[in-house]
Image (cartoon, rainbow over all chains, first blue to last red; front, side, top):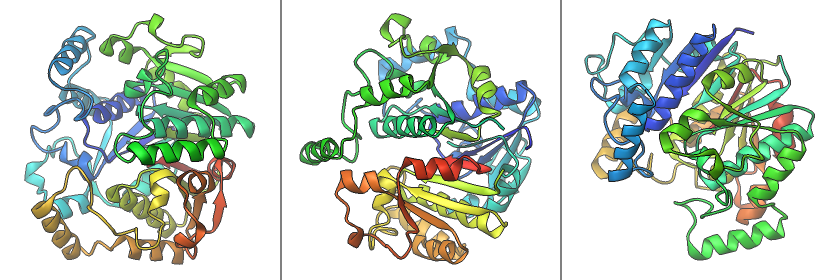
Amino acid sequence: MGNKAVIIVHSGDMDKIYSALIIGNGALSMGLDASLYFTFWGLQRLKKGALDKGPLSKMHMLGLVKWIVKKRMQKANVASLEKLMKDYKELGGRIIACEMTMEIMGIRKEELHTEWIDEYGAVGTYIHEAKDASITLFI
Amino acid sequence: MGNKAVIIVHSGDMDKIYSALIIGNGALSMGLDASLYFTFWGLQRLKKGALDKGPLSKMHMLGLVKWIVKKRMQKANVASLEKLMKDYKELGGRIIACEMTMEIMGIRKEELHTEWIDEYGAVGTYIHEAKDASITLFI
Amino acid sequence: MGNKAVIIVHSGDMDKIYSALIIGNGALSMGLDASLYFTFWGLQRLKKGALDKGPLSKMHMLGLVKWIVKKRMQKANVASLEKLMKDYKELGGRIIACEMTMEIMGIRKEELHTEWIDEYGAVGTYIHEAKDASITLFI
């Protein structure tokens, strides 16, 4: 039983990317390995400049509320997604980009933050990583 | 390998809270331990009076359909979320409230059902619980 | 520790059903067992004719974009959901239909693809399957 967290990042919602990276960083900080498999809308967030773009959540946060939450996040020292990603990579976290999604959505490598990506893979890559993991999540 | 179900409750959608509590109660009934980690929109549901408030799902259920489903749930003896939570606590289920979410969303302890909450924690609390769990879910 | 993937299919979104079936087929192809537990909006997709009906995602894909994606999926040899389901069954994948959902939503067996369904179960069935699984997901 490998001491590893393997997370599928299917959603592109900012609040869910936060959760994925916070869990990934938490796992790494506590001595586990971590792999994030970005697919579908999640993969869109690996495009250059896309990680911190847009509202925290399309449905729950608009205008003033969003502004208040941003201020509170700064006060609570909650890092931006770019910062969380940099920490994740420095701590040794793995990023896998879903090749099928790239093909379907017409995403080229040049559009992505290739410096974050360790592997371009398919479902076999995921199963191989996840079958020995202690924590498996679909976000 | 601990015989435990550890569930992150990220969503505040009523149908997903149902799933989380039903799985939690099912696990406890079958002799497993259970921990629910409430974060983001999920944590909002631990506010006093918030658990059974609102439609089953914002998108799928409106007006008449909602009324029919409610009648059918009564007929099928499906408990309210408050009742499911009380059962969960009586069966020994653990509830963890995410402190970061409280800070970001400006939620004070007095606003929460503190009698349900066993611990106010962060991602480290979650990883500690989840790394030995047999079932890990993100809802 | 059983070499098994056990996935709760709660969502009815087409992109999430894709993920569930692709992961299920991937697991089976790599020698793991697989069980998909269809509940709530997911179960609606087991109704006759419902699997491939509707947009890839209500929110992200409209009109032209949807058409482009469909063309790309054909070009990338991405199977329809019906085809993926047939492969899943042929590879020995298990399907469990949630009885409580059937009762609440008023779904009769005759409306479902009963030839795909191995068992009509409740949360106990799920816990029994999942407690020894190496991969557990909630989709």
